[in-house]
Image 1 (cartoon, rainbow, N blue to C red):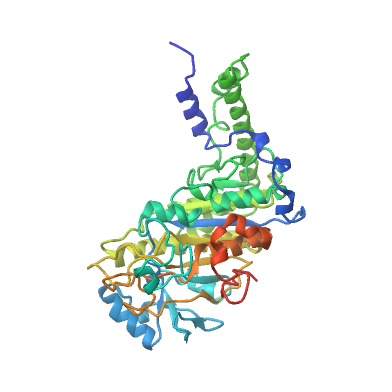
Image 2: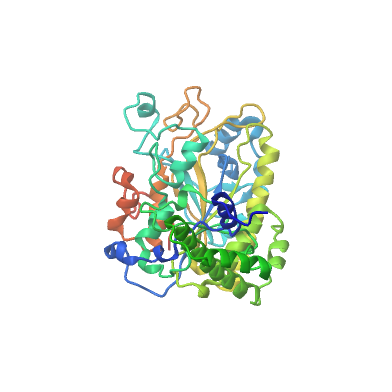
Length: 475
């Protein structure tokens, strides 16, 4: 039997490590990054966690008008058979009135019946709502949308295109993800040469793609790095021997570098998991108590919590995590299926919050929950179709919680915020996803003067760090 290891087999071996780093010594080369694009080196730690809801979250049932009034009446008449009864929504105690797209104010919102814990977080000032956010190139209303007098995001209402643009930039092709670009700009704050600051529990993704390709995503399974750490001595010795065999072939030498990089990264992540598992925090108990044990979101967030707890294993001070769950494309059975997804979201975020609190990391972790688009306000019978603007969430100690940010649509079918020619309530966003992303980038340490290099369309909108944008969700 041949003992030769083919390129394809070698790739599978590396894939089993959960790694995609190309070379360890390319991760921290600050000499190749512009020093002017980061704040001065600091020992403080901040983590950004992006929770991506793939499929198009029906976020106007996640957060909906509850109290009597014009907005509640429009909600009931517009949503029809997919409306949630007011008495089933969890009351949100807003610390300031929410701004509506018509210029009015409203303070009577509620959260989905299965999101009681999220409502508590909001009411405790630990969570904020980003109203009617979506992919935009420049401010748009129904008139300009209809006569195409303004630039629009390519391929609106397409999952693949809008997902890519949400996580990268509003163009037909992708050059970089904004998470990856932030990591490049903040290179001096991520000095670990063995482990990327871009970590994913959901595989490779557009969000963490870098412009210069000098930093690659570390993709881990939810149990931590197991392929090499748990390998038998014989298997590991054989693989090490193969990688150490003399070779003058550039291709083999390159693979050897990849292997060495993978081993180093695997070791660092393993140390982080060991720190967490040897701590006093009982992760399984916390996640089980919140109902998040053995769920996709729960398992991913538990892994992220452990990596954050084990931050001393690395010298990266600005890690960016990517988590993803699906099942939100609900063209039928919306009330039942969306309720299940909301329960998983509620339980997962509750467990994540409790764990971060227990290990002392809630104050330095910002969690963002987003989806590629909202859904039509009117139903197609028992479900809803692809929309545009939607409501998103931010959670964590840095969040100025208990507030709605941006502008909630006035819910007028066929009005200036409705892009649909059949008046189905495809709400045109008033806040760009890149405006809210810029606020997060600035919190991580990107200077205001550098935000346009990541988000070139910002020049078309109100300054995300100014008062007019109404998105000051960082304390």
